[in-house]
Length: 401
Image (cartoon, rainbow, N blue to C red; front, side):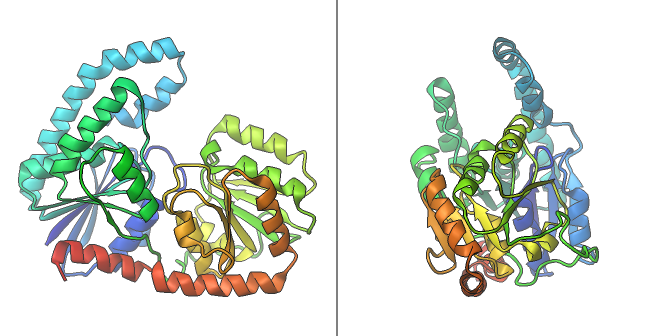
């Protein structure tokens, strides 16, 4: 069977979708041939090639065309609102033409390649044009199994934009995808209520390897000069991730500790975080985007994911659990399905800095509790969130076994 895995990423930011894609490729039966199709500006091409060395049945390709959506939104955000509106309206015909050309090219390409099934990893909904159009092209090419995987809760617009999204969901993806899969029950409920697919969705939990990847470039010590028990945040620096709530929570923490923020994101928000961090007594370290995150977990004592919205699962949670690290997360979305409250860590109300600070105080001041919860987290990861379990579920989607 020749399978097509599709991924579209805009910008180099921490991505759980890339992690899942890499795990699926590494664990997939070698009897199948896999082509991974990416947009031209996808950041993870070399990253995935390095991960998949020796997997000769897997081929990585980029579509031979520049996607307007790759750079258009970033460019428009730098312009005044009236200009953005005028340009968006004016570019609609160009976007439609490019979309139709992409559709035709992909359909012919799938025919030539003999694609038997599509697994399109869409970050959110409506998400990337390449993700959606691969499903439409697959239907046009007669590909029998066309699976759309939605990794996040939907962006819900209003007015005419909402009607357009509903039409897109119900008449195109809702019918042309043979299956729609998502990564948590919370995400499934949100998509079924808000995205207008008009059908039930399936849930397959994300998973990771029981052993972290080895790059051969381990650091001799923590790159931030670790001096105290360390609180770690790994992810995009964006208001929806609630990092400002975490920095605010430090003000109520009496135990010794320091905070390390691993990830990049919005420049203006990052500067606001730096200003807020300067007001607390605990050290706060900004590491930016790192390719060696897996190696940095060994220096982290407590992982915190205080997201306020758009958090359907939280791959960094299971990565931390694999390393025996207790986790504190907010009660938004699918995170509370991953963390067992009071057992592998704590689940706190989203946006509640005081509650978060109290949980941080407990864990930073009690090494035995950290070890106990970390051990329980490792066991939970092995039982529910392993890459073997995730891959087996997806293999059965295509092979029915």
